[in-house]
Image (cartoon, rainbow, N blue to C red; front, side, top):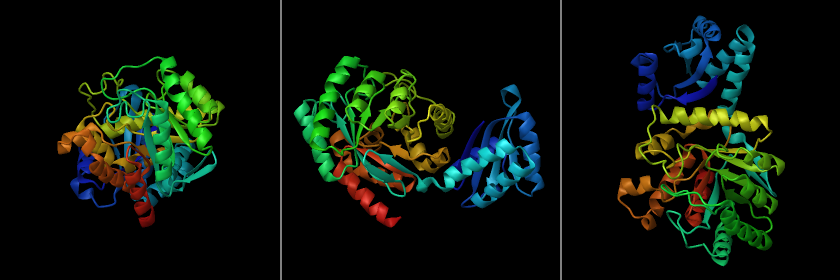
Length: 385
């Protein structure tokens, strides 16, 4: 089963769910939430729906799925959903009740998370800046600019001085159409850079953007604290073993396909739901091996259309019930260029606007090329919270 709290205040979201569950239009009101239980077995679905209805609340059931399963949608305020979950716990299925309460708790206390990373404590009642350092020849925005070690280290130190909380180092381009490089080449690109940054800034919080376990192992051994894995350990499951071994934090990202083919007409029936379900299942795997410092990244621009990206950004709060801080990377991406007809080097202002809106919608880390802008955005919005 998968559990998600959905904000039905947006009329286009309410319309989507009203069609799916045959909800009357007069049910709509601003602030309306829904708790959706997906793939619930028939033996739980029917008595749970009856219990909710008997308590005077509304519970919708859609068409039966395979293997005698249903999807249920319970609407109400957060307090109403909490009270119903308590009643399911005491008068219905106990395990189901606990899982519903956990989902609600994740949503309600989303801003209360905190992680210890290296010498720093990240309190997620505010947002932080992750500066991008591409030690590559062909990244879409700054490929080649910091390819030499001295240039890469110099740029990292500049971003730290500008206020970056995390430096995210990547040795392999993940732009649309890019091809993978060898493990050796990736190691040769980033490990000397990590060593030099740590030598000059021992307390720097370094993230490494890699999908390869060997690269992750060496990077963590040299002092990196976060692994940013665009492939969600699908291509190299060994990677999470090293995350666990070094007690590192982990960025879990969604991507449809690979960088080489991800933008070849990506199609979703419901982009937010499909990404959420993927992340939900992967989080369960990470928790099983004892990885708890997880960031979730819905993967803006990674196998998504322009409209998909906007849908994700508008509905970021629908990811809160996963229970982990959201990391968002929109900096200079092509959907901005396509929307505004802007070249890459003219997208920083638009990127900053979207980064600010992402933080207002729940992002806790913004991954950006322009650290100076990012720091100003975070300072302003953190003071408005």
